[in-house]
Structure formats: structure tokens, C-alpha cells
Length: 220
Length: 245
Image (cartoon, rainbow over all chains, first blue to last red; front, side, top):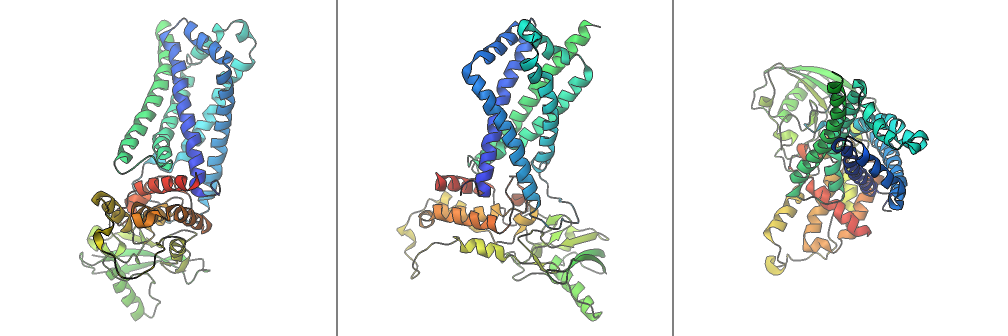
């Protein structure tokens, strides 16, 4: 009954989305270690800790399941929602709503495309590149050196902007779906959602730019 | 003022439908949109053509009968109004105005600009009421309700069921309508008793009738002629969670 209803479905989507949004803070913190310690020791130590910790290992599977579920389920629901209109309006909507709220599927699709590239660049190599087991510092260089190429830095910043647009709507929408808003809090949560989106987008972008600019200035 | 009107014409539910273009002249700025359509219809009747069918009743923004999608907005280019409260001064002389019916699978077109909104009645029949014996009105102060709660319930109760929320939503969702009804009754002591049963039944009916899911874009809130807040949708979600767990 609960999962069959449209409200139940969106509650499930909200929980999965908020969980993924929370993971981004952990990821940002890890990335930040590559900036605060340019020897790479802090980053490698954090990687090693995560690889050894049993709870984090389980969370890795939960996270993967969360991503897969969120991607497929929201795609299914978007497709289903499209079928609620047999004829589209001749004049496109002039109601002033936020772009991010109307185009979650587009921002989500961009995020997914870059996610595949990202998983190949890092997750796959971290897991299956045997040389990194012998020389763990290689993980740090793998992260940093990718941003020495301007196009990768640009790609990643585009990705972070898409992520920010997605988060801008998703946090407040998720909390709203869980019934955590009222007339007083609705605008405050919109602001919190936007601030969180800016924090994540700017945070990740600054790290990428830092590695790119450090490389450029050192080789100038 | 002169206008070019592009109006959706459809002979019946099974007809494919098409736009027809009409020129209308000498309309004064204080003419209401529906009066302008009346003038057009008089002209069409004189020419021996079929008049444009559109819903209307009170023409005071109370009944919720009128509802047209005008130039990309439900109820046209003004805020917090119904179509009957829209005046031609909101347009510029020489404008082309595109008039469409509400478009949603759950609101099939009957003729031209008239849609069948009985889906809303069916949702209400599932629980948009309080099961009490009717009789004389009880003493007003016998059940005390804080004014802020009464105000919020009244805001929700101001929904006239026009369907602009469905028309504005990219998913043709009826969540704001259902939320207004659920919230209105859940806020008041008389309605709380059946709140759990009501929210489950009304949502199940809404889904069954082919309305889409709410994705919190707030388009419904912007276009609602009664300015009903989506915070009522948050209450509906809370009521639904409470009813299930």
C-alpha cells in the first residue's frame, strides 16, 4: 500500500536522495585533504582507513545500491509522470518556477554521464590497479594529476554545477516530501538547500581549480 | 483594443482538436476575459458558426468553474485570480492570445475549452468530509480552536477546486488540491478523528485516476487563484506517514 502510492514512492526517492547528498560532504572532506596536505600522506591515510574499516566497506555497498536505486527509480517515475498528459500545451509554461525544479531529470542525466567517467578515473583504478597497492601514494598523484589537464578541470566544474543545480531543488524537496516543512520553514529550507548546493559546488570546484592552478604556476 | 485569438476547438472527447484563429476588434480594457469570449461568441453565432464552449458560473472568483490556459499560464497573465477575474487591460493592443483547455489525462476534454473535472469530485467522495450526524449547528465555543489553527485551516479550505494546480504542474499532479482538503480537515478537531483513513483513501483515488506525482516545483502554488501554500502538501505527507507507520 505504502510503496504503491505516489506519496510513498516519492518518500522513498527523498530518503535515497538525501542519503546521497549527505555522502557528498564526506567525499568533499576527503578531497579537501589533498589541499591541506600536499605531501599526500593525509589523503592516503584516509583512503587506507576507509579500505580497512568494516562499517565503511558495508557503506560502500549501501552507497552503490543507493545510487543505482535512485537513478533507475527516478527515471521510471519521470517516465510515468510524462504519461499524465496526452496532449502537450501549445504555448510552453510561463509560470515562473526555478529551472532546477523543472529539470531534475536533465541535471541528473548530466551527473550520471560524468559519474561514469569519474568512477572509471578513480574508483576503478583505486580498486583494480595493483601498482597502487604497492605504492599507495600513487592514489594521491592519481587524484591531483588528473586536474593538471585543463579540460578535465573544466569537465569536473561543469559536473559540479549540474550537481549544484540538482541539489538546489533536491534538499528542500526531499525535506518537504518527508513533511519537515511548514509555512514558517518553507522559505528557510529553500535557502538552506541553495546554500548547501553552493557549498558542495564551490567546495569541489575550488579543490579542482587549486590543483590545476598549482600545476600551472609551478610550471610557468 | 484589437486581438488575434488562437483558440482550441474540439468537437468532442474523441475528436483530435485543432486551433482556430479569430480576429476580435473594439474591446475595451475594462472588459473581462470571459466577456470578451462572450462578444466573440455573439459574433460567431451571427455568422452562423458554432460558439466556443467554455465553463463559467459565478464570474466572481468563487465557484471555480472557469479555467483556461491563456498564453502559457492557467487563468492567464495575472496572479491570484481566476479566469473570470482577468481583464483585457492585462494584454497589449494587437496581442495574439492563445487559449487552451486544462491538459491532463485525468481531465478529459468534453468540448472546446471545457474539461471534465469530475475526478476531483471522486477524490472528495473518498474522504473529503466528516462522518457526523447532521443536525443543528453546535454552540461555536464548545470546541475551542486556536485562531492560528483556524486561519490555516481556512486558508486550505479556500480551495475552489478549479484545477489550475493540475494544469500548471508538469506532472499534472493533483497534490495541492488533495493536500488542501486533507490539511483543512486534519487541522480541525472534528476532522482529526478520520485523518488517517482519509489521507490514505484520497491519495489512493488520486493515483487511480491518473494524476501524476508531485515533484515540488511550486508551479501549483504560484498559479493557485486562492494562493494556497505547498506547506499543505508537507502536512499531507506527514499525515500519510503517520497513517502508515
